[in-house]
Length: 442
Image (cartoon, rainbow, N blue to C red; front, side):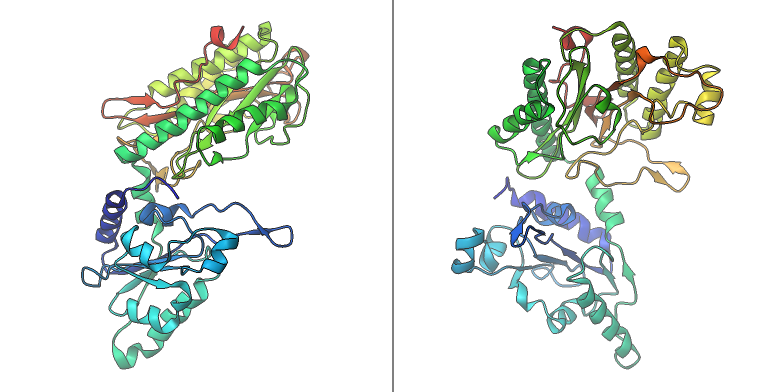
């Protein structure tokens, strides 16, 4: 069971229904996924379904029906109460709970989601809003119902004449966080930051990456969260130059840096996503300090660019400019910064964007561009700001750029914070995680 406020979800459905217009939406929940022979992975609800319903059980289907009269616009199909099944798999709300606790106008047992019943609910809608290619159990039923409507249209004059995606509307709503969502994100970021602080305090040479991971994730669970929002990255030394390193099995070496990219997911799925990098033995080498200072300066400049009216592209460009100019000063790049950026001659050292949206999903939904125009940041949007540098032999040095000296190799640094756009600027939600050079050393 999750943190729940009926009014929040009812308001979201109302906004969604208003924008649907003439379309009836079919939004399925996630299904359980098997592993081994007869076990399921821990359940994770579909974020679109959860955003509209707050209902956290597998296999359910929501109908949002703006063409129906009030009192018939939110229909849930759910697993029925079944004491014998609940002994094995846990509590179910059933149809009565779906109405009483989750605000459904009407609820049916899931096995009553038949072609006949769905046809009845869709009758009168001028379009069907359904995400093709994501829900293999439900999709054949939806297409069959729609196909039969089209087959009989010449006789009845009644059919949904279009199949549209609900996601442009839904993801636009999800991109702009409500005050309630910002509170949940603050909590996720605070707990995530606390875990990073604990990890830095206990890290020492000779430990395994997995030991540090265990401390982080134990704090997540002890704080009442669902656990890690994603597979934690705990990468010592050269492992930090692998962007999605998750083996977390190596010994931590004296003189190396440790990069930790980890965040928790709270009860209603909002996430933290923080990266910190620090010296395992408590002291930066000269080269490590130079690169860390550069990444930190790039991040601080990029965070200052987060405000209404700017764009995620501007945030990235701000960080990139600082990084490239600093790498030229250090001799790791050569030439005019504008030319280096235009040609992409920095990409062997910095190969990813500077951030992504954050919310119910770690890489949250929402467009970054509308055609040729970048989406402007608005109050309530939350994004990560995470520049980095990764110095290794994995990627070829571009022609005309200097070969990398050995003293730089094996240094991987990323600094990531979660930042909300406010009316007059921004709020760093993850500010409880230290990142200054003084704090990183001990």
